[in-house]
Image (cartoon, rainbow, N blue to C red):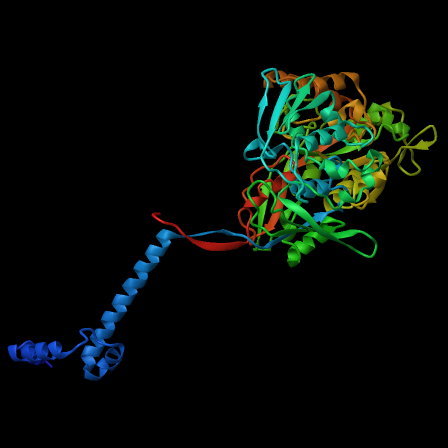
Amino acid sequence: MNFSSLFRRTFFFFKDKWLNVKARILVWRKQFKNFFSPEKLLDKRIIFALEERKIPSVKQLLKSGAVFGKKEKFLLLIFLVIFFSSLCVEAGRFCLRHIIITPNYGGVYTEGLVGRPRYINPLFSIVSNVDSDITRLVYSGLLRFDPSAGYSADLASSYDISDDQKVYTFYLRDNLKWQDNAPLTVDDVIFTVNAIQNSEYGSPLLKSFSGVTVEKVDDKTVRFRLKEPYLGFKESLTVGILPQHLWAEISPLAAHLAEMNLKPIGAGPFKFKSFVKDKNGEIKSYTLDRNENFYGKKSYLDRIVFRFYPNSRESIAALSTGEVDGINFLSSKEALDKKQNIVYYSLTLPQYTAVFFNLKSGNPALLDKNVRKALSLAANKEKILREVLGGNGQILRGPIPRGFIGYSGEAKNYDFNLTEASAFLDKAGWKQSGDDNFRKKDGATLEITLAAVDQGEQNHLAEILRSDWEGLGVKINLHIIPSSQIQRMVIKPRLYDALIYGEILGPESELLPYWHSTQIEDPGLNLSGFSNALLDKYLEEIRKIGNLAERAKEFISLQNILVEEVPAIFLYSPNYIYPVSKRIKGIELQYIVTPKDRLASIENWFINEKRVWVKNK
């Protein structure tokens, strides 16, 4: 086929198509003219005028399709689709502008804790994280501490501090009530402080209120007078207030045995509901309900349930299977990395883990500073941080972590050095024997019992220390104790040569409760039994100094004493990993001062949601 023939065929093809289109246009024009002809329009006006209803009924609309042609039906369908689609889009935009999703009340949060509750009582709870967590929710103090906002009034509506920092005056809120509906008054505040100051109660908070007098100004005003300025006194005033009308009937000597230690009545955002024990009498779970008498913002959560586990392995397993929504602490998130429904809050806090040497244990080897220095030099802190925490923390030179009040890189330090460690033991007279490789002196073997909580992190740490120290020629006996028994069986009677334990300093890096000579005996927290007059002086002076630069000098001197005398080996400060299910919303955490601070804003946590109409958004 030549080009000329192809051109003619193509030309006539398109000519035929154009003639068809032109014919159709002529037909449509004729139909359009007929439809709008004067005769047709007159007929329609006459019919419309005779109809009583000017708007088609639903029945008529449903039958309208019978008079439409295919093309008319198609055009009508297109119109309706466009119309309703536009309507839906605009309605959606309108709703987005005026409807927001907000928290709603209801739901239960379940958390796993390692340990068992004993004293849900502000007087005694400081020695146990489990007790402190629950006490924080059941009781309220004059002040509260929120890591993101600092100190604020709690039961007090406001307060004044004198210019010389020695007089604190608090004004209580109106209509405060206990969870049993009894009124909360200034008398309850005074009773609580007097109980702390009464040695018969045996409260570890005694030192914090030493030299403090409290007086009732009027029914709503209470005043504290200090002998000397004490910068950490605000922290002391966060202690929960006890109901006098209930505790006044209990003898101070019997306070530790009172039923209310496990069935408390406070004035906090949550109240005691129940607990469940196993066949051995151990508490397995503890339930709190929202306190409707709480003066402040009510929690969105209806209920909080704590479940207790003997070790971290079982608590992690409970989180992994969904038995709990969160656990109070995770040393490493490796065991849960594959769980996509969990949020890991990595928080910093002023906490350290150390090995405390009990200088009152009767083990003569530990009374020799050279032995303690040798053990410190033989503790491979980098290896410990890497293998125990997966690097999730910082190595310590002293008792204050980097970034907190009092920290200084100028403090003395003992770096890992096995050669120097061996020299210190030789100097102390402990020589290695060819028989069993353990060091001996006057026929006695250099032997130490190392106690630790039966918990994954501490178990691993204890094994590393035993390996390192036995390589040095020191025989190590491990004593692993369930967390539920560590306080009663080991710490209170001070039954250990060396103890792996963690301590928390508080917002002002408060070291006095842990190192002052007055805190050696239970319920004091000086776990080494270390007594040093110069150290006591620094601990007391730091409390009075307001200038941070001057305080820093005292902190350096204080830490140098602890590092030089080695009553403890400061190992590391862990990051605090708090794993919680994604279904728990409203958690906003960056750093905490104590583990209980993770619950400081629990009134903002929520599970349920609702949609709220907002005008003029």
